[in-house]
Image (cartoon, rainbow, N blue to C red; front, side, top):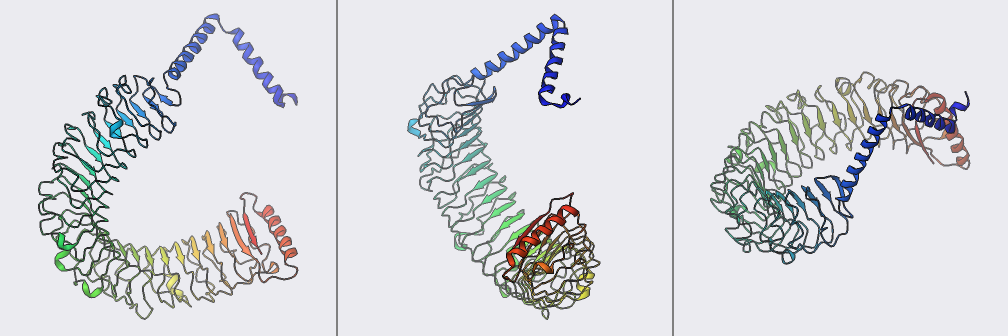
Length: 597
């Protein structure tokens, strides 16, 4: 019996079984098996032989020669190839013969080579009558190559040195739907007015990261237009007059000013849903923004005021981004946002607001007001905005005296609130619906009992970076849903008798704690991670049984202070004790103890 478990004997036993099966098998079966093996071998050999050297052919239809350091296009490409990948090589020339036997190719990737329009033969693409997707990005093209197949649906010329697009560059490309010309050297003067005239099926065009000073003429059926990162300072009246299918317009990172826009600059964009005007030089919200807009980016401008008329017509607007401007409370007309019936997200952080804008939209769910100068929240501040779920007011100047009683009462659905970096001295009264509460980096010295016990849904509480010295023993006893509790960077000398019963992540580092007893964490058997470093612990002050019975514990961070002459010996002894306790009590889970000096 012992020999049967020897590896060598096991191998011999298997060979004997195979020998018996082979010689007891009928001759016809052996012949059939041999033929099948020969056939499979021939198929594998055939596939291998049809694949050019230095290339990979995962299927007969795909030839992958990318990143192969090729200087010439392989001459033995399979006639069955549909996808040919030649990107990331050192190709500099395409002759008439290169693709003469590859008429089935639909996708040709030549990205990242050294090809120029002068090194492409006149009939180089003549045989590619089925070509749909052509990638010539990141080469050395200065003009769009002539005689490209008329069957092309998607043409990518990004990252070249193209500085001129004439009338005939894209002539007869009647099937072209997507054209990518970003990251080139195209200017408004070098782009012919008729360059895109015949592209009747064009749906998307990207001209971003060029040197355009104006929006060019393009087909009426365009759906997406990328003009970001150019030098556009104005939009001509009527330029979009017949662009009834345009749904997304990207104009961020230009030089747009209000003087360069007229009341008819956006006329005709009846289906536009996405408009990005961020990072320009606008001082006011432009007039007559299309009524169907759902997402409007106006961040990083020089906006100084918002009037009643600015947004009144945008009944379908869902996302309004106004951060990083020069808005203050007096420059916003009262009720400017009240007619935005569909608005769900409003970003106004990093402005100069002293108060929360009045008459917020009724369906607003996400309100981000961090990094302003807001000092007070009144009872009616959030009146009418009962749908708010996420409120971020970090780094303002809110005090407890500036919080009127019942300020958050109109927010029955609020689940996440962030009041970090303000001037609070006590945990305020928050909505019962709160699940995630951030109060770090305030001046909090006390936690009123009801401020925590009334929050029956509280899941995540952050009180780090405050001035807490003591916490009531039973304040977290009934917080049965709390999983994460952060009390780090305070002045705690003692810990409460009860932690949340289901807490998993507990941060107590950077306090003034000096003792961990046997029962310190006994109320929280589900602990996974405990951070205790940078306190005043010495080896004798931490009970070896403090983590007894915690089956889910994964990590404990702790270090010893203050140093003494026999510190090294104590640390070694304590490490050994903790490891011994770990082996004894945590056999089902490996616990990592990080014990610093």
